[in-house]
Image (tube, rainbow, N blue to C red; front, side, top):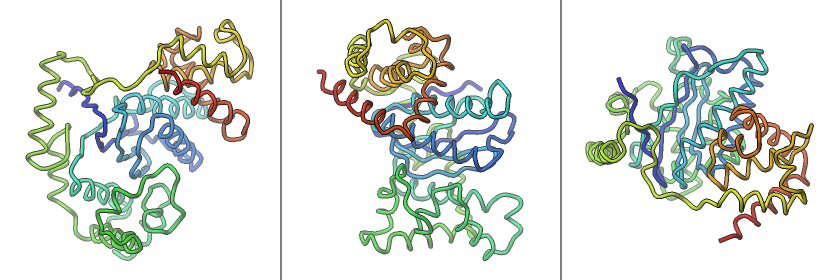
Length: 336
């Protein structure tokens, strides 16, 4: 069966899934899970994605998010590539970690977003190991599960900076002090009473999750896309967002870093110059990592990914580098 064209538009809400190749584990340790979440947080900030919730399982991941800039594919490419580079390097292996491309279904009705959040957060207690346990034991396990956003939703741990809780919790009523308790009751009621109607709706189409009206609208968008562009994949169903010319971005990089243009294409051990330039080109010129490699004289898109991972690691401990990037951001965004 042909893979559907990716529907991307500003403000779209998606249920995204990532699965290990041949159903193999994509996390082999808690360190792997921590690294994935750090990469997720960094990618969310870089691409201005609103992450509503997540759940990490051994061989797959669920994300519910929205894309104000209509840039789902770019965001996911960065997330998958950065984590795969880390995982392969750590385990001394090569090749694909994920099974094909990520799955993404549009979800744009509040009722279905709320029910989807319950479905995602209940994943840990619907494994074979958990299904046979008593309800009380499964609830205890769910509340303690550290690799989803559920604990922070119900106040069992501090809110996560990279998760936007407001949209989901606001569906549980106007009183903020009661929303978390209401959400906990809503989710945990599903442990013993599976939402079969929602599961059927979710499996109805690869394009969207929602009512008949939602399916009709998304199908119409999809057919328009197919008719207009043929069978190409990952075509954005939106107007292009604000991007800056490559030359303009590179001039800003040189100005902030105080270097010549030649330096940007020269290999320097442990230098942050090319990683900073790579990030700026991805963020503000809309280039793919392969295109950035060509501009900066790097060997491949994978090499760019490694540069970005290195930059992320340095940013966590180097406040002066954080300030430099903030200055660069202001300078680029100040150009019109």
